Image 1: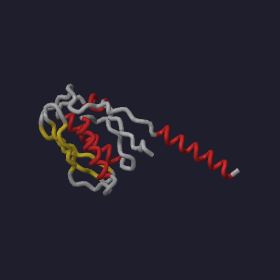
Image 2: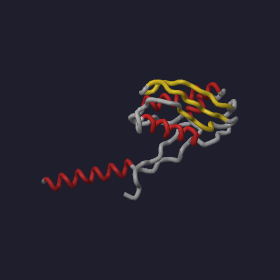
Image 3: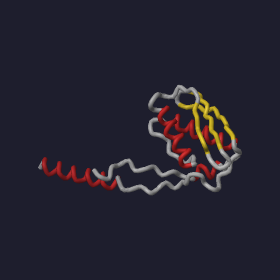
Image 4: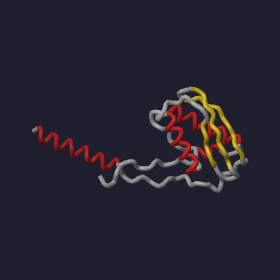
Length: 145
């Protein structure tokens, strides 16, 4: 009876893993969106994360978000700081604010996203359009497992 229960449980677990790891669609946001228009320059915003306030500096060209830099901060090392690094890269790569926050670093994530959003407003961007371009997360499950 124990072997049978274990076999059924293992089969259900394997089936749920296979179903949960289906391929994800390609990112919906396209870099360098033709509708994007900014007043070129570098803009700053001060936001509050988990560890206190920090400065978000975002540089725009006429048609793209070029760089995002974060100043001195007290965000948790390898949690908040890593979330800031990852999200900065995703925002620039996808030219979108429609990114998910990083689990375990929600306050740091939201502070960065809100800082870039504030900078985009200062640069004359259509923030609603930047936020509406949702970035699909890549599938983290291994397909060869």
